[in-house]
Image (cartoon, rainbow, N blue to C red; front, side):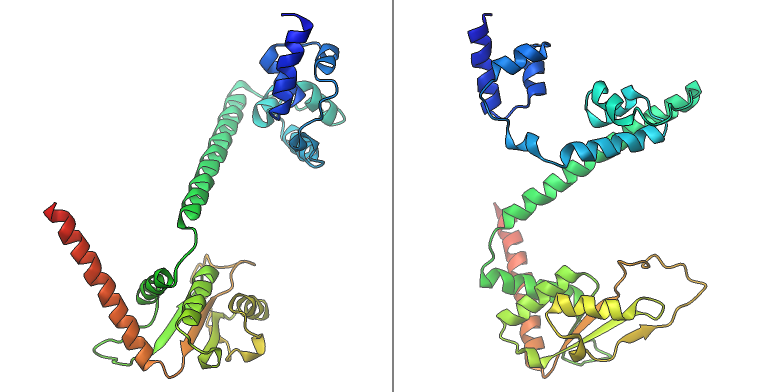
Length: 283
């Protein structure tokens, strides 16, 4: 193909947002000078101008090199050229030659790491797609969601304890936010709410209180005294570390009537679901 024909293809690919390397691979042009002339005057895509993209790749390449990976293995992991890898890691010591068995283990681990990354990307894509499917929520939809949320997680009256009151406790910030949004929809005044943190005594209690105050949109001084759970040294707990913030309970004062309405909404949801199932079974 003549120069003008190649240039027309190269320019079209450039305008589609391809990098020089992608155009080179697509058109099988391995002369960088010729490639530069073919796309002369065409601005580089914005995504190739990201200032931190190559810095991140460089740092990752150096990290892998220090772990003993070869250029081929780093290229497989990062997808960049070996010439770039050579420039980035040439000041680092050459890794010791590994035994064949160890090389096989390393290669297997790299493949597994790659597989995990692919799975995680697919997982996140599925979650994002499902989230977008929800879109906006009507008042009726929030009413039903909140009723189901409360009946699953909130306090309920029992034959041995027939108290009718609205009380909700959870460790998930999103559950707390949704519950508060639901109470706002129902017209429950904020001065009827009582907030209290429940957490193990050996945790960072002040940090947890600040966290839940931010989540609930309440000043921490308005919280009731935090309930501390005694630590049992014989128990191996997994809810530890900086991310452990205990639970937040929300109690609604003078809520017997509201509790009965929630109970009725839930019965209505159950009845509607059963009717829907019956209608489907008849068809």
